[in-house]
Length: 128
Image: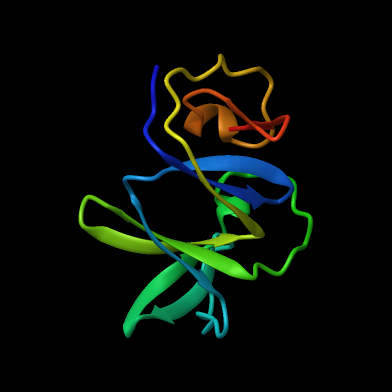
């Protein structure tokens, strides 16, 4: 399976790749407006370029072991006309197009197995 250009980021000490086609912008998080009684995966609302959007705790959404980080970044993604911001611990940058994804090792932490199409290598580390 091949993928196009990917954004490589760290979430809860796990490297992930997001398809470049859905990423719109990376931004530093300055102010998060909490939402009372929101689910654990929704950190609150943020404003990006004058647009208010939900900020999703990607680590919680992927059921990764919580390291308790305070996310300094968010990536704005757009899919099927909807825009969200995903909280990230670190942004490593865009990786080149990958011609082939490696097989997914099992078991994977949290729900990564349901959301991983394969693995890439970046700097000697596995990226899901």
